[in-house]
Image 1 (tube, rainbow over the protein chains, first blue to last red):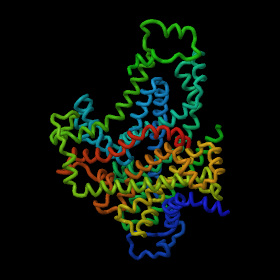
Image 2 (cartoon, rainbow over the protein chains, first blue to last red):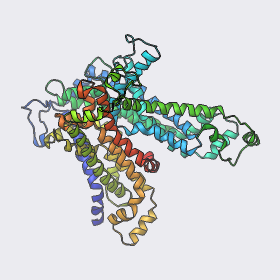
Image 3 (cartoon, chains in turn brown, purple):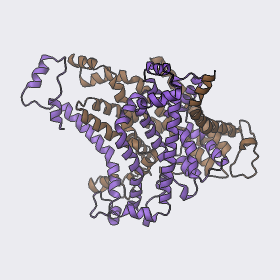
Image 4 (cartoon, one colour):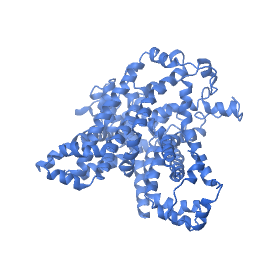
Length: 303
Length: 304
């Protein structure tokens, strides 16, 4: 018993940080979601630990569920997710297949390293970079399209971030660029576990490259694919930095999702209705959780 | 090395059909179309990956008129933008220092606590280990960062850490503690138990075992954890922008995200220079440690 107490000292620092700055804030947010707490209201009554005590029961949740903006926000996030996830998985899978077949070890390493470069740039800096890439005045993309290729004129050039139908595609492309190398590494690790004899044997039997890929490589990678689908679903549905950096608080734009709505309610408009924003956050999180649990259920039965 | 030599110098696989062997020794062998296509596609994607970075680099050394006429190759180069931005953006030195301080502290603290916890979870007897693991896993399938945000804001507010850049170290450490512990746990799991048991027989305590025997063996995992935390903390935007209202307390991502090509020190090529200054440390560190990083990914991170 003495021993295990001493052993706990090894776990304690990590657990403490996790509980204090992750678990406790989430519990706090849950508490807020049952109050009418407004941050800028100086008379907001509070109890110990600074928690507000003006309880309103489930009123916030009832309002959130009837809030058109919330539903729109969830639908927009889901739409982006539907675009984001397939590309984030299929493109790296194809690239990994190609890199895996490069037999010169130095070249194979070089490809991996180059593709990994974007993964070493933190997300928000990636978003800043692509905000400039898509810029209409200095951005190189439209320069190439308009001045080099002559496909567009300055007047009808694509508004990558301004156009409502284009913006999700532009953002997804940026995300794929960012995640390409990192996800390729996952698939390469998965492919390394496929016995070489199996592939050689299939090749000698005359299987075409495509059939080899479909019938041997993809099934072997399925566990990796399923894990990545779940994880990237979580990423895409809860995206916020991109929308704050590249979009704004225009409620008509597709980038105004539930996360941006939560942010605007909590920190921008009115007297910061953080009680209501907390309810938005929890409803969004629960909606995501339901889908994640559903995915686990579906994927498990397939094994 | 060219694609041609790559195909011809490939070592003979043990099981090959007769036709293949004949084909391999035929003079003037054609490079298979597949090989060419494969390399063409890969080179195309590599170019796509590099292009934006090269473009900013180029933008940061263009002369001002060239930068605003947006052709990609400038007529005249101007290398003064780095010095200009460094001198003329009043808070830049402070912002840079904030980023360095917050990131370094976060990386050090998280690496130490994740190593301790990873070791504890694999080799030590501690009741409740399963609960800890379950909590960490659950947090990875929950939109923790977004949902916790208002709570973290309150927490920092109550602790008086609004507008204190160093205060970001606490939430930053918590931000990727779960994934860091998992990487370290995965790496510790690859170490044979016998090694630990024999160390115990010799009377080494848990701490001496970790520092004396195991630490060199988990080096690759530690590099992965350092890089994960470096990238997270160096680029974190949400907390840094919301918790810091004074420009002097900002970190680099907040400076860059809030600027959009103005006059003087905020002119485009000067912003690009700041951008290059912001991404260089990470790319340099990756360049130096990539060998261990790649191995570390194989050992622990990709299995999580």
